[in-house]
Amino acid sequence: MRLQKCSRCQIKKPCSDFHKDKARNNGVARYCKPCKKDYDKHGNNPKLWDKYIVYYLPKHRYIGMTMNIKRRINQHITKEGRNVDGYKILITTKSKRIAHLAETFLHIIGFNGFRY
Image 1 (cartoon, rainbow, N blue to C red):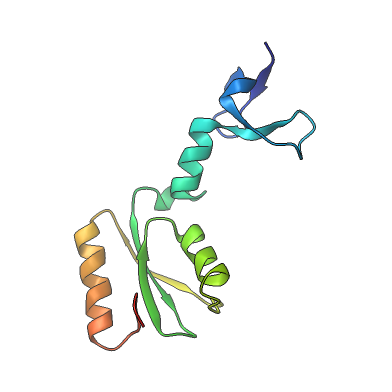
Image 2 (image 1 turned 135 degrees about the horizontal axis):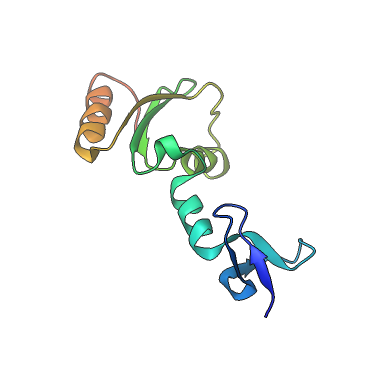
């Protein structure tokens, strides 16, 4: 049984604990499955893990809320074709309620949001 060291948790695990990746020499991904799942859910910035993020896209006057800013910004680019240059994180909080209230308030005072 071959072992592979996860680049994230630094633990040697069997290759069956890694996703396949034909582009790599050894045929398996750099991160083990649990680390990859965690990375996909939260992104690579530990300060933003398990926090709700309210962000602003200035070119569209768009306010949004997410838990994974990297994935959400990528969706704005690929699916909605929005210009995300100069996006700003307005608040980060562990409280979904506070993040939702901030987002709703900004929509009420005239910023675009989810359904514009």
